[in-house]
Amino acid sequence: MFSLFDLPALHDTRIHVVDVGAMAIDEDIYAPLERAGRATVLGFEPVPEECANLNANARPGHRYVPQAVGDGRTRTLHLCNYSMTSSLYEPESDLLNLLPRPRRAGAGSRHSGAEDRSPRRYSRSPRG
Image (cartoon, rainbow, N blue to C red; front, side):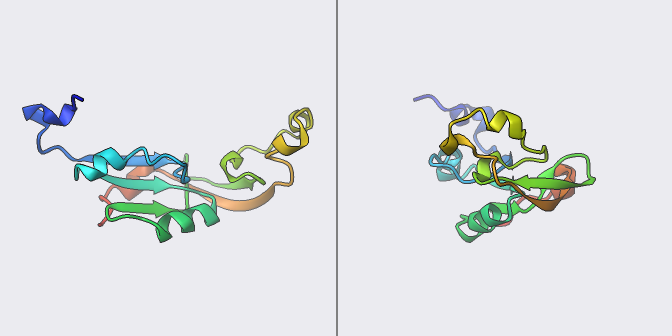
């Protein structure tokens, strides 16, 4: 398979990934870049438990911060039963009530203070 890194102009290129909402998923989408020694990852994950999990399992060149990306104001993070649906936006209870019970991911949300951060504040590359 052709890789852009095979092009002479990109031979020594490193990619600095900013992953907003860095929650771990089944597929490690940056693994091919990491195996090639081409990527560092700075992840923003505002859900405290998810961020702690990411940092506990972080590979060299990965750094995760427990912040949301936004305009810099302190806002409320609505932590939902299913972490992936947590948001700075309040869950729409009327809409959630239309879903079958197991799908009500936002039901039972709790709140957490979340400070929005601009990626500029974390401009240094993650240390490996």
